[in-house]
Image (cartoon, rainbow, N blue to C red; front, side, top):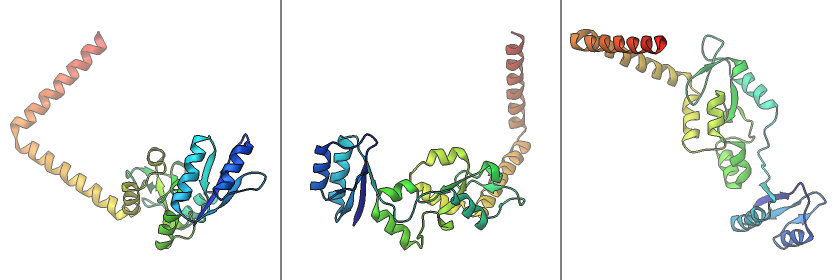
Length: 211
């Protein structure tokens, strides 16, 4: 079942109201709403709305974003590093409480677009869009980049919410860097090449500054 609401700031024409009524919706004085039984019917109404610049949405039975999502997140999750920093679940950057955003693993937009998506969340034990299991810390850049996308972003959020994953990644990076440094120190020709390259860069910078 698809609970649909169609609205428009400028109001509806009588022709639009009649068409929406023929597709199973009712006019309540503010919007046209109703429940259709199949995705095909919902998609048909959506196409009509797009063609007539009307706002189409499916009622999100899991609820909507509200000011409490940050409070819910911070009351359930403490800083992960040094008792002060949260880790962005997507890129691993450290941010304080004041500089971290709270992101929905399964986005509000996707939930509002699909009843089947809402059912998928329920199968994962999520009964509210602001459930702590559906919230992660994210830096502003990653939050803006993700938008309402799912797919790989959901997987990254599920893995990235665990600080042990990031500790392992940081350890591996340091180990690789240490190996590279050791190899350089053991190869005189590499040391010489790096020194020569650094000298050329410094000369170039000096020339730019003097010019």
